[in-house]
Length: 270
Image (tube, rainbow, N blue to C red; front, side, top):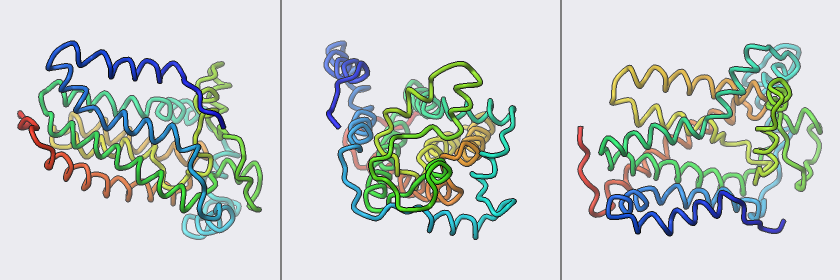
């Protein structure tokens, strides 16, 4: 697949070039935010990475059905897909659409409050989660539930087009093309395990937890809703969600280590 420069590429690269010229404060912000740019490069170029392991289809589905049985012999992702609920359609579509924004806004607020070391740790954890995910996708590619629903549990087509799963219903319900535009650029169709959709809000829970319950309650609620939406919208199995939790734990350890190791980081201001 040929590489194309998109508008966001031009805007981000232009920002990296111009902002440091605005002064020391802007230069420090760009340096602290470097993990976001590196992550963007990794995610956007996953399409060029080869799949070095067999694509798991029926085996993972069978394990999911055994460990987390639902009704009618289906996995929960399949059962929800065949029993849509209007309230769940709206709620799950909304949280699934803003999951990245829900990570970036709290991180930016931490930076604005001069909690720079915490901001650095949070962003390096974000990078670590995506790097770990990319590595796992290469060696352990897994078909998402929507693919199994559409194509069955036979040998997977490595050149399969990205799918929308239950988010297609949200687009149709709202009369928009948000998810279709987003997922048509999905760089890794068989990157279902781990779920990074749940990793990002779990990082928010961890890094905002010390700020008290006014932060904890909304962060926890959003995290729970995204975890449910990942299964409800047939994008992930429960096993994928649990793997996302494990990746988050490893990423937090790595991000904290990097933040403490970087020279010249300002002390955290309470």
